[in-house]
Image (cartoon, rainbow, N blue to C red; front, side, top):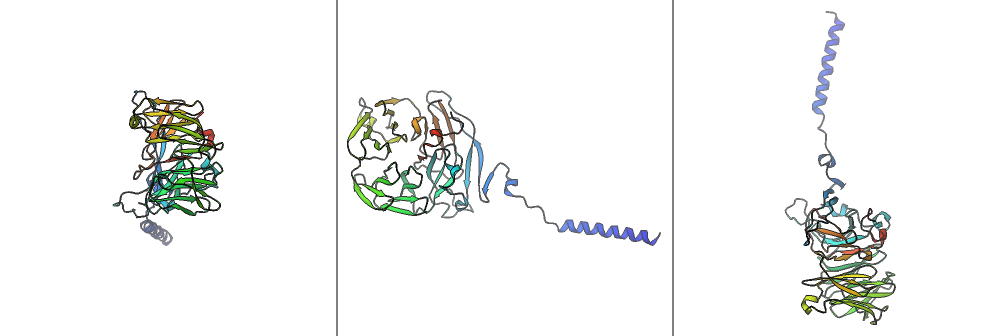
Length: 366
């Protein structure tokens, strides 16, 4: 055999051996989490959401109003990585928004659990379940009572332990208003410059966003109030009262339950629309709806009271985010889904940015 042919065979064998050696030394491909879990939508390395269909709802009249469609369900393992609410991001404010207390991790046996992740924080999302944002995470203890956002979305008034506080989303500063126990009651003026609040059940004060000073007030407020066109609307135990400006002068009143016992008529939960035109209340047995324009109050047969109430009273939502229920009272449709993938919350939520999208809670709504 010619020498050149033998050399060619030996060279081919050497090349083959080198290829096998290279294959043996090549590390296996590392798959991304998105590739391993294609149904998840990773926002950051440790945080994601999945799209899950809404659920059937049972109504006492037997009518099926349930709308079945996918909504985001969020899993937050590292809250500091998650996007924060940003006043400069206009895309976050094209729909009304809901804010709520939530400790994103509750399982202390989870290897990713930390005291920070198990701490109560304030979050927000659009009324269609999208655009979850972290609002505030420097709370010392759990939040309580109804939180209220200023009309310009900048200031958040909330309860933290035995304190009433205000958080400024623009500067990141937190201000302590009072350190006494008592259910938080807040109402912002329409220009977002003044916050009225209660320290205890009977002591009322106001806080100025410019001077940061707290001074006494005698505004007749409850835990459910709104200023609109300079007047105050306040939902009381047995009705709604419209006051002239900042005075105690009553302009209009609508009451419910005159034929009921005090216990059956006294409201335990209350909600009001952004303009004060509509309000709802729930006693231990009944639901009541108020139309302040007509000055009427009626007992409702609805199986769901809207604990948060949208513009013109069309859309309403449940008060907890563990299971969030939305009702469209105009089209008689309802949605129910579970936005929180881990842990649960039974704290009150609240609506803000309520005039966006003409008050409609879904972009496709008409």
